[in-house]
Length: 143
Image 1 (spheres, helix red, strand yellow):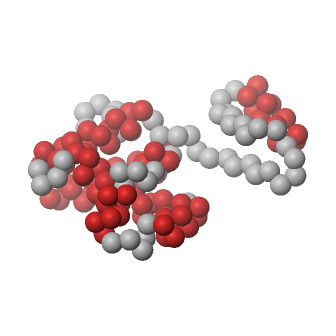
Image 2 (cartoon, one colour):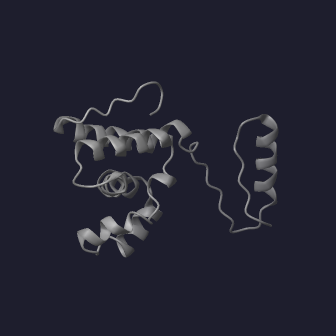
């Protein structure tokens, strides 16, 4: 049996998912997770990184993305995902700060967040940068 992922959108898909569960060998794991982040949320985070880079040109957009992932995304995932916490704590946490920042270019953080986590991530960025004078309001439903 191969790994299978079902997005529960219709009764028929739920039937297939139920059937896969009943046919799965002993020892397999079933994980029910919230829907992934939206494309609008993803686009919104990139706009936010650009806005921060414009306000603070001491770093570029990619640098601010790494900063935000480390300072806001990592704490959210460490608090909510035991597997992430274990992997991060063993691999990244012991590293010097500058190395942690560099690793954020490659370490998955926002890409593995669900909608709620990404919304909290955006809120945390706003809570930090708006008091510093950066207007991070996004037009429309970007975030």
